[in-house]
Length: 81
Image (tube, rainbow, N blue to C red; front, side):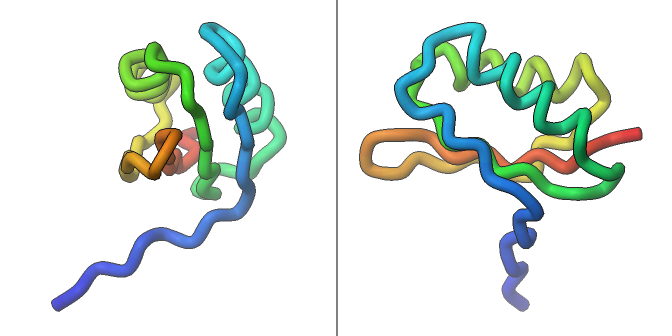
């Protein structure tokens, strides 16, 4: 059985932004979203690999997945309650 990737409700392009901006912008975008919606974050800051999962844990959001594209990372975050 294959599991489909979650559908994104919004995408945040944080490519080119350095710590802490990807997390701060993700926090702001998630505030405007409904619980259970999925935010896709695109980032190329090396610190995001640590910062985004830590942010999700601390803020009560679920990190559904993270992947590496050619020149950036892709994170999928489900907004918690």
